[in-house]
Length: 223
Image 1 (cartoon, helix red, strand yellow):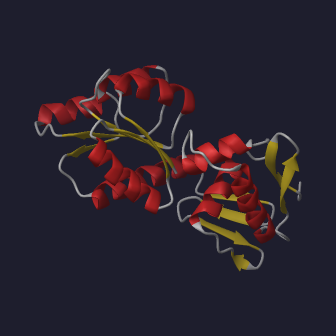
Image 2 (cartoon, rainbow, N blue to C red; image 1 turned 90 degrees about the horizontal axis):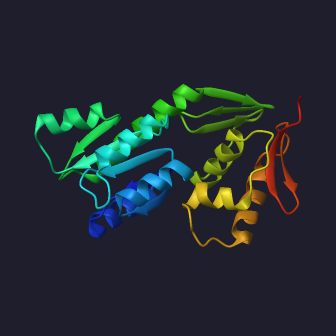
Image 3 (spheres, rainbow, N blue to C red; image 1 turned 30 degrees about the horizontal axis):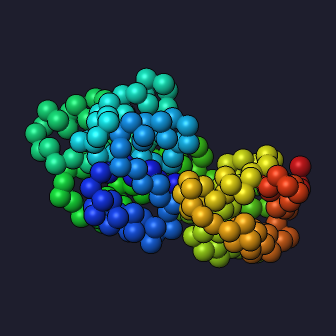
């Protein structure tokens, strides 16, 4: 998943960021509320983790602004405030979950996974593309000969293509989705990742085609 972390405590943010990256997520870290609002409005995310007390705008204000625009990114609020009224305000502002500091990283990552599963369930539990079956909730890809063993990064790449089935996906978009916006990833690293995934999809009725100078697209050859 692509996660936007908005936290002005650099030490805490780095700890969360490292834990999420270890689990294969792409993370964009922002320390300012106003900047975070603009980023989420333009770049989006699979899940946003927002501290409540931020410079520029509070987490409450960011969530309200997003929901007012119809932006449905799942949001977890982080705060040191323990009063019930604060939690109620956070949820009423449009947040999906609320976690009080201090917390265990394992609990935060579990809640992120839960929101990711909920969003995947809304989009579709199992999708059939060619002779492939992609289970978003179980995070598995199955072909005509059984389960296709994909490392996290390759599975995230497949999901990126599946989300844009039949449409060209640029290398920049792949880089942003898999590694975070602004990540300095060499183009040949993306090419190598695509090449590995392409080999594993051989014989499944699904092809990754190269649109020279533009990017790649996932194509269902059975249609």
